[in-house]
Length: 127
Image 1 (tube, rainbow, N blue to C red):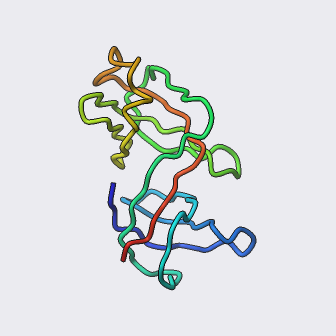
Image 2 (image 1 turned 180 degrees about the vertical axis):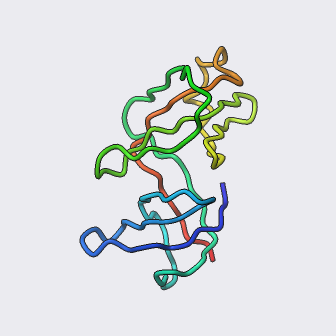
């Protein structure tokens, strides 16, 4: 999915780490691709995707609360929101696409509030 993001900070320690603000939410993302120079405070068009490197972990969330919660100081997150199986998306205040291969067995969670764990938010800067 494409978003307009403000670059808050680039990590001085990890070259691929960027702190972005999207729709008022502050996110630590892994820069997958950036073919041009980016400057702190700048606004950029980005494509963001959920990277699930290990097991896909999803559970029904008893709360209507939507949000994105970083797990410790890592790139990992808990994404909480409404799952739309038909569109392959989760609405957590920011709409994320979820690969349909992960959702195959979870049709019963359609339009339910869920929590998924992702290993990182990967971002491509596209202008």
